[in-house]
Length: 404
Image (cartoon, rainbow, N blue to C red; front, side, top):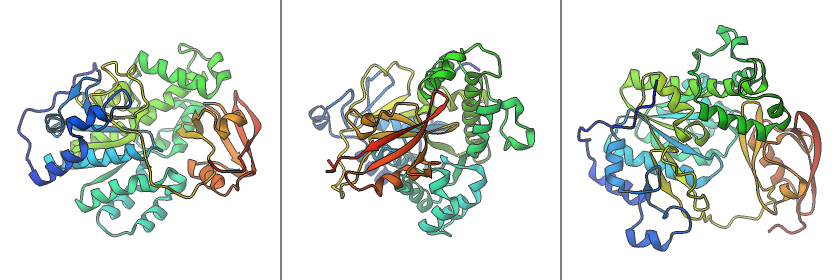
């Protein structure tokens, strides 16, 4: 189906004025402070549309509070992204309390655990243990627990949107047609991706494994690595879109999705699959980091973006840092970015490297690597086994004698 523009219903939402005031104050800075604190493309604390044009927060939130689905993108390891998600969720709840929260972080099989969490039957520790958070997702649970606590306080349904990673990995290896119906976890056949999404995924694959990218153009046979990679991403997007659409259909609530930016940017991925399922007017919102340029604000990347300031965290005991951002992919954990002048850069790590082993221990989730790095003493060397261009190789990360 062709994309339909985001057009929320015109009916006046229910206003909870005390909560709305608190939410709006947390989502926007005074006009005099915005320009003074501007450090990047957008003023910190300000909303803008997909072209970067300023938007007033209260009218925006009122429109969003009548949308069927609101998708809040994130980069998984950035604390301010999750704070922004929580504040936006609170603002929407102030205007329309009939919400459900959908989370990419957990597969469908863990829905009973989420139900018990929302019902107040578990502690945080019990929840993390029963979801096996460290293995299933791996990113710091403290990023997500405030959102989960908000949902529990207000008894909002929380929906596990994902499927087990094994299904995505099998699709990436063998193709969707090779997956028996009984093993598909109820996921239907995805809508064909747009040409723009295919191009973006091919670029991603090229970064992840250059040898596969050279041997697989977008129009290769169905068994090509590129085709399977695109199929796997489509299944991933479709699975989450189906749970969102099902929740909207069965509850009538606005579904607020908490998921990675790559699944929503440009209204590709999950929004595209939602349109195929009959929800063409979902809204996509993204946080915009202070160091992110304006060139991506092409009018399509999102319905609205929120400017963030330079991240400033409380001082913590200094720990060794590798200097990479890790990303989950269809076939494992990969390097998403490498910091200039970092230990990782000096070791020769590249974007797209798959980290397999650290100090002799398998790396199945980002937390596995984080745990190994935190045990490193200043001045020590950390051996890593990675996969690049289809072959395994060893690199050594050399940590400085003094942590900076």
